[in-house]
Length: 404
Figure 1 (cartoon, rainbow, N blue to C red):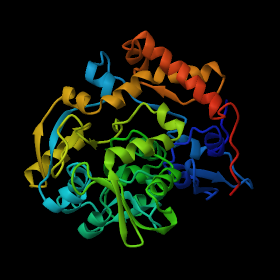
Figure 2 (cartoon, rainbow, N blue to C red; figure 1 turned 30 degrees about the horizontal axis):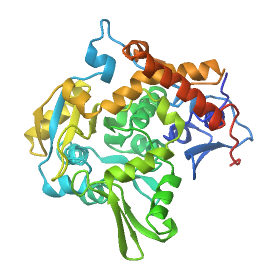
Figure 3 (tube, helix red, strand yellow; figure 1 turned 180 degrees about the vertical axis):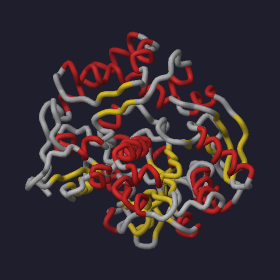
């Protein structure tokens, strides 16, 4: 199927919600809206669309291409480019406490601003309402710390890539793996943007629940989401708790209970993603789930490019991070669920093709090799399970959104 605009991508449920299409459209024909039970989606004005396809060129939802080195090793097949793996935490106790995991992402961002003199950091944070997110361009330590922490609800940081492009100096970009992939695509067609991106950090991701997920979670705790004043998904200890302040009274549930509930509200496009660990980023960070939980928290840090390696090592020398070398085995032990999802992806995509449905094209991810490592039962579950979801969730037809 030939997509004309990102409206087609959204209506066939392939949108990743990154927001890059809104940045890329030179005529301002693409607007974004948080669809309550889907996520942030693009709406395209019908009048005078020039069919330039810029919005499609930056879209990670319809596909990704990653160069594969000859004779790829086991680590590359599973996790993409990896120069080094580290485990540790932010030296600053406030950064470690306020951030998710061990505060590594915030510490790296502070080092880029203070040590490398980056002009600012483009990232997602809490929005104008407790359930919403919006893109922020933080230029001070205070701003960055006030927006630290995970947000398990829709965010589209690529909608404001223009802030990086127009900045006087280089900037740091932080986002989900799909956001960083979209950044790389956008930089490929906008040289001015590419010149201003100092580095990118991706946060390990198993999928983004819709806003409905958070609303239903709060409802299950005995309150209405409209009464919530502040929501914290994770952190303040590791892994911390989900907490919502409702009319002055805090509602809390453990992180694992909250995620077990929220993950049911992930759009199915998240299940078709080959990259849960930020393979297109300079640095990616996540949770070391193979370690004992509790305490102030730890992070896994993966340097994927030489630029990323320089930043990580510089942050260690400058006293922003305390890290020790680890390896690919620790990464696999910590994020086994993301590897299992990636290994099953070839079969899930096969199910879409058997129904003659549009599906994303992924090149260079060696998905068939990972698929061959699965047993017969796991392969059948991937294909037949996807087929059932296609039928039950109505994926056999387009989903029309209200026009912008």
